[in-house]
Length: 303
Image (tube, rainbow, N blue to C red; front, top):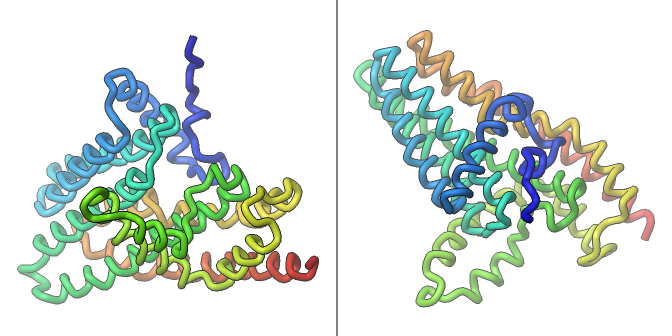
């Protein structure tokens, strides 16, 4: 008899879960995952459905009608429940793939490109070219915020669940994998990887102390798991930073978006991203780099 997979089994880690996700999105996502598993829908299909819903949500924000905006908000919440469900379904069924992970990350990009474009089209008669310029700058930093939040979260999971429980990648290894793929036999996978490789390189470039720490870890432990006491000590130091990775992900962001739409000033959302979220990004990176530097110095001192 197949063992029933519980809601707890489908979570990445209690350390990295936000309270809104725990009380709302994860329970809903779990129920969607159970349904999708029953009717043999794959995690990647669920991700594609979330993209469709998220893009449709963005279209609704073009209109000045608050009721149409509210429909967009509900569609975006629905899309995010599917975004939760695809990962939970993957953990429930063991149906993992790097393409699935990349597609899951790209899903949010599709949503917000649609949202940004809709807001810009809505405000162009009043703002002209300037709203597009503001959106482009905001979009650039939005990408950095989301990428670094995801990267630090996966580095933390390396110490919570070990190497098999983290989706942390290494650009050097990825480069070799891309080289070994052929356009003829592995077109889709190679296409995804060609875009994913510079994304990973950029994450590494923003975290020099973390990369130095990773190099020391590799030199000391190789492919072996890190000692349990060392993992737990770093986990405790890293865990307070996880609240910032969550703030820079979805829930805080869309709360600001929804408020700006309710008050009829969607451009306020761009200013929120450029000010509040960028300050948090800088603070998060500074603190995390400091933690990694401290542990790296100590570990090298034990050589």
